[in-house]
Image (cartoon, rainbow, N blue to C red; front, side, top):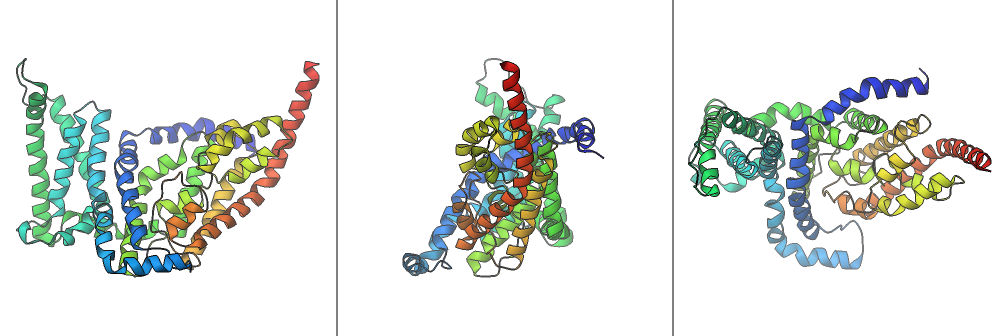
Length: 434
């Protein structure tokens, strides 16, 4: 199949299907739940984890002194971390229901609150909870409860929509203050949702002697293990880049499905780091954003530099426009300006460079050449700094440098071919204008 035929097939056959997936209201709501509600909590908690666990692998005097100084109060410093990472699923339960309710024109805040409380109900044993230590439940309110949090958010929003559409709500007469009307409209779906999840938790506890998040996590363990494998990482990055190649935001689509797995593994790493144990997870959100999407999806930082020095005026101008965004890992000017979207020449390196660097990154983490990620910095953190923060080691920055060099080598021959074509077109345009 020729390049043009392949691109035509992707544009006409594959893109419509993937576009529908990208626009799925449930996937969009899950993505928003993480990006809008969970991420600020995670980043805030990560700051305290950094303070409590300085990168002692960097043998600098002030870092070693810092580690010794905080050792007596490390437990106290970690409290905000434990109550941010530890409540991650609670935020996702709220955020999923809130986002769905917003898209369905429901009372989003009330729906989010119902979902959050329902998630708390299924996360505690169906026993005298006054005798249950909060620390025993904390793991399932954090990364280990993400799957149930998402399901609770979806079901809660669905019940709210069903009751609203069927008119099964308490309506107040005209003249009643809006906040009172709002409260009474939510009472019936609130009561039904609470009864439903209370009954589910009671049944699960009575039959299995575990909570619903514990049961679901046990069932999902094979999927979590598979998601932490090299084939899974490679499949995810290739799918991301195929989507980007036809103009669909690949990270958003893939993360809508993969994010719970990524965050479960990141939370497990953070917990292990606090306990001084070996880090179990490799494939996390920072695995991609900090090491494979350097400069933006497709690892396009080297292209920006090449564009700046290009003989093509078009590419040179794109390089100038893209430079500052690239520092913060934003590369839409490159993707849509070069363009890389639906570009037969750049199609191969746009997929190959991330695939190869995914392989390098996986090997580096699997062999412990680079410590595995324990922190999720914002994706806008610049290169090298992000590598150090996410792993707690200077080797994170070294891995980023290696990936940049490899990507540059892969991109260069294709860039030169594309540049030659554009220069030729620009010269012909100049002749025609004379």
